[in-house]
Length: 188
View 1: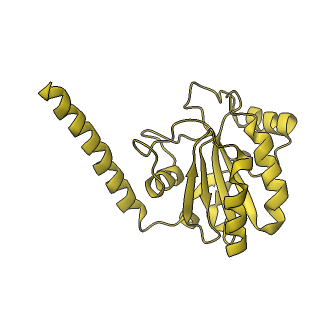
View 2 (view 1 turned 60 degrees about the vertical axis):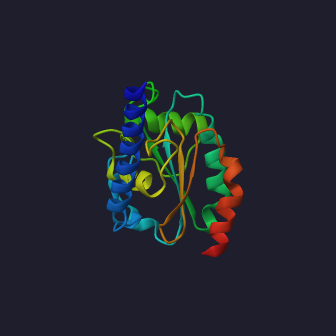
């Protein structure tokens, strides 16, 4: 019994100390310093989104949450002219639910959901190969029981100064975050 309690304590302590280190590493960084490849393969600087309210989402084409593309596109159309953008980052780390290449993903998003918001090349959001942008987002806005992204369609909302302000679980539908987006647009 003592061994199990000690092991549990060490595991929890390890998670919290790791989270503290990640947060300290993120402290001197800015969203605008990161770059990522677009789904077309062009390097994009996040600095091009200065002054915009940004929603970053890890996506997948074969997930139970995939229909959220529709709600995301609706949000994008509604608020794009007010300085809002959605950035989609396909990820195949959750039960291989994004198996296609970038051309397959782009075609799927266009034909099935008429996605017009910027989509990026496939990335890892957890593990040794985590994209630097996601390391930063997870460190600033940690999750429940560790910072890892738990599933597809986890959402990170950033204000118009590039500051991450809120993290949403995959179960939170795009239309449920309208109020948060509107508040940030009003503050611009």
